[in-house]
View 1 (cartoon, one colour):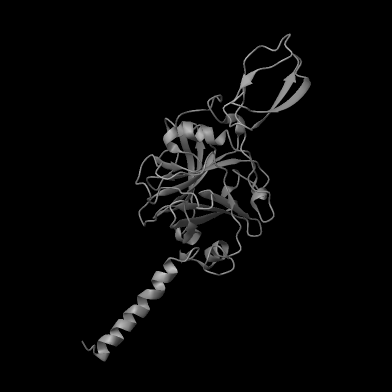
View 2: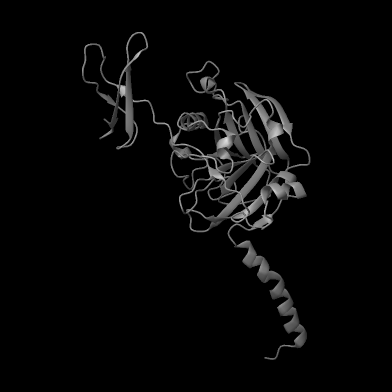
Length: 331
């Protein structure tokens, strides 16, 4: 059957219009929704490459208690835009970077899906370590001990919430909505074997004045939220670095994570920084009293091969001896 030249030209015009879009949209690292301002693009894509893998930013992955699993959100669809997901290469689902030259704190999460729906993507910060967890007088099920959080609230903006044990004490939303501080990109391959999505956003260090400075130690955990709001007062969907299905509630998961990760500073997350350290082992349990004993027996919840360092002190708090051993059958 003959095809008229008019129809043929129409075919090539349509094909030529759609083909580059399809090809580009599947390119790993492609920034398909850049920041809306010149400053935002300069921060999130400093080399103006349009691709997060060659734009000059070296994000540091947050520690994980285990590789971020699939299908573990507390709420929301599996494989959706609140599901954090690990890379096929084992890389984590949440990242941070400190741009010391421009004094900006950058955040990245990898998601299984993406959407224009209003959701929250939060990094919760603990800076007062003695005030965290069930042993602290400030502990509540509402807030186990976080001092502030930075939340990307899609459709609204980027908000910094100051917190106490009862919830939010103050909030500051950066001017201009979320678009000046936020970009979306195609991720690398995930554990599903297909690409996911990177949500990158940032806040000026000045917006954290009084909360965090470059040399101040902190611990952080990334979460997704079913609505565009605080993770402390809202409903968490997925917590990075844990299998949410293993914990009775979100507070137990948050405590387990924060008590297992080392403290870090923003200076450790700049170019040439050391990044996040190794996980902290759980405190082992001694089986017998030490008075008059020459052998100590105990157990630990850590995996076999974990090194356990035992320090023995006298009644005056003076160190008497130090011994390091490796676990075998949790003993």
